[in-house]
Image 1 (cartoon, helix red, strand yellow):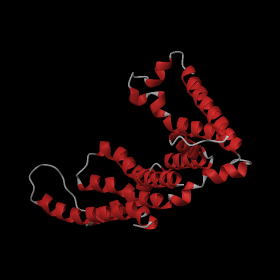
Image 2: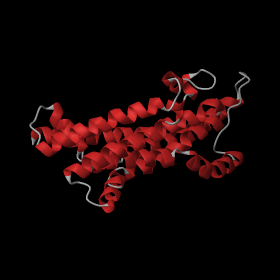
Image 3: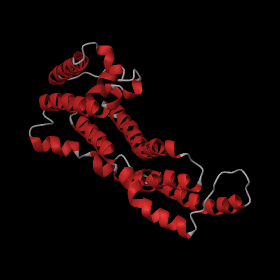
Length: 243
């Protein structure tokens, strides 16, 4: 399968799933007419269903985690363009590194360690970062702010390694690295459009409780990026290994 085909696979799968939900809603609506379960089943093929679909289309797209996704893609791009990814693979394969790359890897490790120490030093008791105001980890500072932590850490180690190894000579080099993965992941961004409509359709039909909708919708939006990123990473490692 070519790269173009596999990259557009999430968009095709989500689009087919969304179309299947519309067709299934018709049958579910018919079944609901004869059901005595007490639960309301509605069909999208109705005046109310069409109005609802058009009304919620923009809201569903707006609710997708665009900002979080773009921040992660930018973080990964600046990390890859810094050459740190290649250095880590070479270290894992026990390949000989040049003196400057060994020096850069050592300083990058020091930055990573210092960043971690400063992160936990911001609290009077470091373990408080793992517990929220209600003593639940789901509302802790680490969980709530993990995205900013990942971006800051990625930017710090990338600038350190990229500057020392000569990949980042100017601000424009950093900007280009930060945006390098956006063209490759454009099909994943496209897949978010049908993905953002799947959960609202399940809600309207009556097959999903409203309380779980947003979380599940976010998971569907993230999956195309994880899928394409994983395949590309494996391919890159294989190319480096063969080289």
